[in-house]
Amino acid sequence: IMRRVVQEMRLLGALDPSMGELVGSAIEAMGPQYPELVDAAGRITSIAVGEEASFLETLGRGTTLLDMAVTGLKSFGGTVLPGDQVFALHDTFGFPFEITLEMATEAGVEVDEDGFRRLMTEQKERAKADARVRKAAVGKLGTVGTLAEILRADRDESVRDEAAGVLLDIALGAFEAD
Image (cartoon, rainbow, N blue to C red; front, top):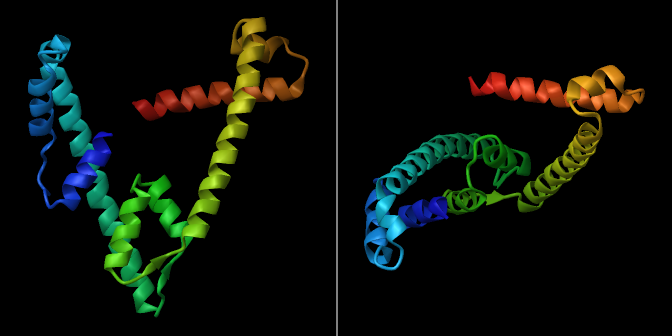
């Protein structure tokens, strides 16, 4: 919701950060009915301002990348931004699809929406399949006890492989968090 507010404020011409002021007004208006908002106002404002700053960075980076893609497209006489480029902007860089559509229209190019939606569907299907596999591994984990025990005890090679994959993902996730 906050990103949508930032996006809408941008469309209305408010290019400077404004979430702090908006949150303050909302807390002031709703505080009498929800006193916990007043008690947590500093934390709420801090989180909202941080999210806005992060999203504004995403918008800046995405806008630069989209501008480069449009310039490249036009330099070769193209008029349709490929779905895979739009998907990469969205999936890799977090650039909202709606903003891509808006900016592409302003730049006089079209977007391969079908290609983008196809790639989104494929990604969702991969994510669902991955979740099913992880759920099965977690189910197995519950009966055996730990992933390490699965690696030592399970005779089903595919379950051992999945447990090893989950352990690797956990390790990589912890490594990336550092």
